[in-house]
Amino acid sequence: MQDTTDAKKILAYLRDMIDLSRQLHRPDMVDLYCDAWEVAATQIYGALPPRKPNIGHYVAEPKPTTPPVWRHMMLAKPFRKIIARDGDTEILECGHRIWNFADIPGSPPAKRRRCGDCARANETRKDAGRVTRPPEKAAGSA
Image (cartoon, rainbow, N blue to C red):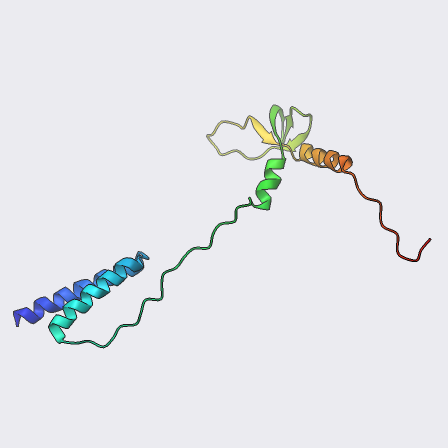
């Protein structure tokens, strides 16, 4: 009687370890504990029916190598030093005024901000420097 109780405790322990390994997303450990459970159950109960084969484990999709568009847009805005604060606005060293962002209470005030106006001005300068091809004439028109 004692032997069957000990055997059932061992099988219960192995089942718990299989469940824990599944929760921790460790398919390698699941396979090892399933094999151990099968060996123990075979010794206790005799031959068992065949087990389903392992279909593999989850592999995460690779991350994109290019930075996201929002990061590119943020980095296009150059950092400018704040030279004055006027009510709800801040005046940057480039002369542009931006809305005063709410800082976290208790933290020191920001010394620099990203200027969207300078980013737009840089874009228009880039566009002005590009050489564009004249539109092609439609076939048959003079």
